[in-house]
Length: 108
Image (cartoon, rainbow, N blue to C red; front, side, top):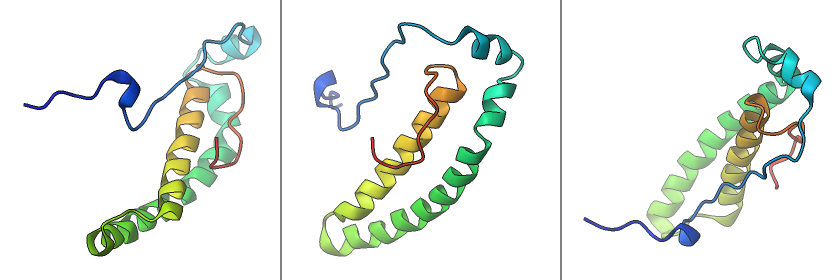
């Protein structure tokens, strides 16, 4: 049985800063099933849907690249991690972890 790496050496880290203050109005209107936040996220969800379709094909092509070359192409890696980063920002906004609307970009 192998031991997991120490916490500072994980390949992926998720850091969400604790907000000093949150929007009370947005919180009150978000109580019934995240309705307000969900409606606000419709454009981002449409875009991320198509980005995830593209990421599926990029991962499939990267699988074959890794099989034959032994390494993951940097551009493909950046695209896939960017799509996951964007999806995490959307989810954090939906669950009220942040009041900042997720930007439409793959970079941090």
